[in-house]
Length: 380
Image 1 (spheres, rainbow, N blue to C red):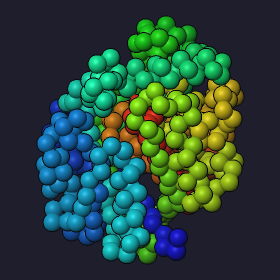
Image 2 (cartoon, rainbow, N blue to C red; image 1 turned 90 degrees about the horizontal axis):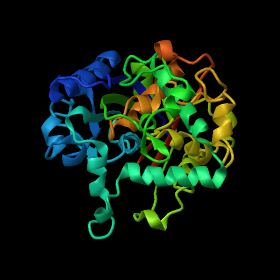
Image 3 (cartoon, rainbow, N blue to C red; image 1 turned 120 degrees about the horizontal axis):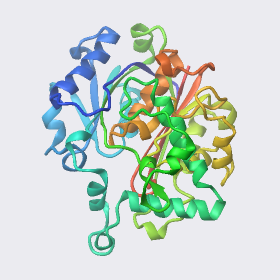
């Protein structure tokens, strides 16, 4: 890959519910990222948005609704519906094509005005066979968690540690929706949503708007003293029917390997300094550790017990608080990218980790039991 694509600036809004108008929120986050870079909306070459229409957005033809507020007036642009890290990758490819020297990527989700996630994901099922039994994302996650505990001997205490770590990290994050200081015993007392999955182990329904400005190498160096460079990307989709899949051998491994090969990473445990992972359910963070190659299959529980993934461990994971702290369904992957960029720049404020971060991993997922995964590698 001869040409380089740099991340120039990032901006995001808090995840807690607000009465702010959606269009005003879109305008605010886009204006902030452009102001940081010192450019006007007329200077943006192309816009790629990540949002949903009816299901996660509550709108018809969403991009027609917010396009002007998002700096896309009279711009060549497109929209990605599902995982916002794909919108990031689309923008990277537009710059690599040579047609644009800058691209604005926006992830938009005003979750507080939408139905709960399970009501929405119920409609992702096949209408003839699966929908009749009430399948939704949390049901699928509970089935996956039970299989994980039974096959590898992972304990509920180990899963609870993810909640303690991430919600504790969120105390330092001004954008986080849920912040709590807990211990494992308090998590274990949380009521079951469906056994073995507890209520506090499920991500909330959050707002979440984020903007990322990209540029080619020449332009990026003009706009910022410290661009963060795109290194690699991979994504992979699993089969549709839940019963056709091994829920513990998902497509995260394929997505990660594609990203690692592009980025030239051979040993992710040693070469990646920090990771921001999308973990809609606490146990999934442990499972994703394994799929990303941070530890062996079945080793996720012992890995978190080692302290390696703590904010000041040797492999910090979700120092922002992760998705358990802030969960805007569509834009959460792009938020992971923004958080990694801030950590690499040393600009994450109170949530900044102590170790030097040169290379970071961003992960996004959606669908039942992690049906789809995307992994991006960025660094200095």
